[in-house]
Length: 125
Image (cartoon, rainbow, N blue to C red; front, side, top):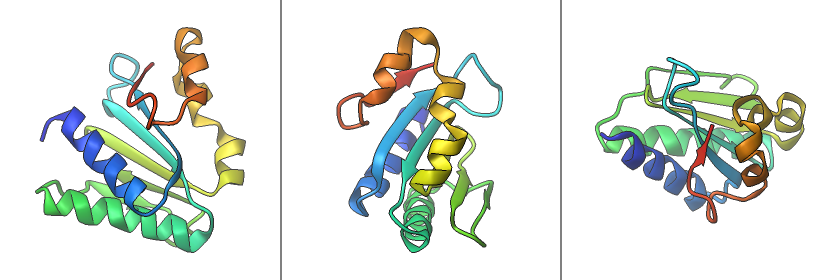
């Protein structure tokens, strides 16, 4: 599955379960780990878990097997590695603390980071 299609699938899965403040950041050329990072917040640990599970289920339905997941035990920050797309689902306080958007965005795109994914589908790093 193409990176863009997989990113849209992830975003759709998160939106379907009311994921909050969804961001997609293009990190191609910044890291060899992945092409896109999708970051979203959940309102509670149960919501974070449900969002991550939704992403995993939708990816599997599309024939994409996750390479791994981390954080399911506490559900404060769950990472889902889909190879070309890495998904971070976090509680708002955890997200604020780690501020991944600031880590991956350049000055040129930092202003776009304030726009939700419904307005800016993909941010260039």
